[in-house]
Structures are given as C-alpha cells and as structure tokens.
Length: 307
Image 1: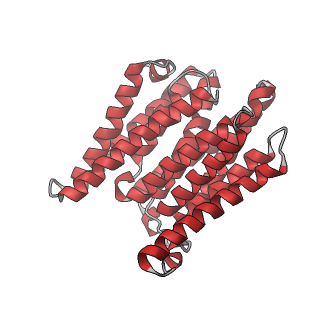
Image 2: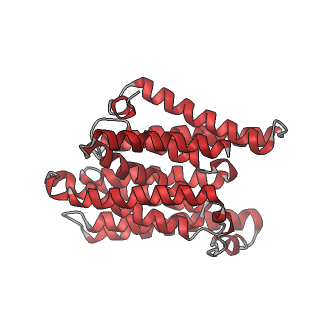
Image 3: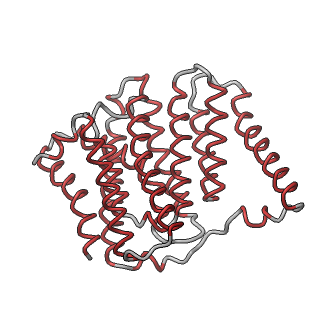
C-alpha cells in the first residue's frame, strides 16, 4: 500500500482511521502499563486524554487547511498521530491539556495574516497561552511566538504589542482574586512557576534514543528543506511559512524547560513538527524515499509498543 498516495489526499476515511489509530495505541499503552486494574477516576482520565488527542489532531488539520500551511492533504495529521503513538502521552494529563490549549493559541496566531479582528485574535491567543501555562507552566513561552507573529505583521500599531501584556495581566489579577477569596492567601503563586529539571534519566533507554535520533534527524532535514523552498512561496503565504519554523523552535524550549523529564513533554513538538515534515513529504519528488519515511513513522510506534 502506498501510504503517501493514501494520505496525500484529504477524505473522511483518513480522519476516521487516524482517530482510531490514536485511540487504539493509547488504550494498548494503558493496558500494557497498568493491566486491567484501574480505578474509575483513572479510566475517566485516560479517556479524556484520548479525546483531547483526537481533537488535537482534528484541530491541527483545521489550522493547516484554514491558513494554507500545507497543500490539501492529511500528511500533517498522519505524522502527528504517529508521533503521539510513539510518545508516553498517557502519563501526564496536564501536558496533553497544555498542548491542546497551545494549539488553540497557534490557530489564532496563524490566522493573523488576515487583519480582520486583529485585536481579538491577539487577545484570544494570549488567554489560551495563559490557560495552557496553568497546566504546564513553561507553555508561557508561547508568548514569545505570539510577539514574533506580531512583529512580522506589515502593519503593527503599538497597541498590538500591549494587548498580550494587558490580557495576561488581567487574567492574572482575576485568578489572584479568585484564589484570595477561596484560600485567603497568595500561596498558589509559589507553586505556579516551576523550576527547570535537568534530570534526563527517562531519556536513557534505547527506545527513546532511537526515537530522538530518527525524529530530530527528519525534523532538522525538513526545516532546512523548508527554508530552501522559501523563494518559491508566494509572498502572501511567506509569513506563515516562516512562522511554522519559529513555532518549532519555541516548542523545543517549551519541552526542554520541563519541570519533569518523562519524554511526554516532547508532545509540544508534535503539531509544529508535523506541519514541517508534512511540507517535506508533499514537496519532495523522490517517491520511494517518501514512502520509506512514511512507513518508518507508521512502523516505529508498533515496534516501541512491542519492546
């Protein structure tokens, strides 16, 4: 079966199959890690993670299609689904929720190429980033990407630069007031900001080493390939074309600054990396190399599950 031919098209069956693919792998991971002995709260939590991941996949496709980040295909969500299947995503609900909210922010940021409702888009993105930081503090670095997007606008009134600050400050004051009424203290502040962990013990396994080598090799190659194709991109799409690369860079730091290194934090790289790698798959003319690459992405989750 030619995977690149199948996912090179956009049809409802692709979304259905990838949704099932994510759900099956997540369930198998839970069963292999915990057996069938789970409390109902744990079962509810695991189901919620699966639902979030499937919605993330659909949101990614909507974002790519709406903002013309790639051509009309399902390569991006295929890569995203395979990356999710390779990562221990069922271990940390907070990280999965944070990446979903960051995707919501990215959706608003990439839509800023249209100047319609610009203030609302910037404010929405700011609030989604702040909400993500509640579940995973270092999601706050998404503000850097937001400012990069603002600075790349052809017309950038000073108020655009103030909106994220006002939005974040306003949300912070509301949160502080709620906690003050509830607990009569600001103790929550001491647990909000998280230190950076330098304990990479979880990255010491052969499985993780193989994943990192393969993933970052393909990602770095795809980034340079994307940059090389920049002159061929129509001017009106060039801004978002470059912003995708900046989103990958910011996501690397969001994952790297994690307060707990359990490999799950690499999920923050999944969506932006999927867009970049999908761009490589759709523009590279070497059919057999693309096919081997696509099959490698599909087979590795199965191999990691068995090992």
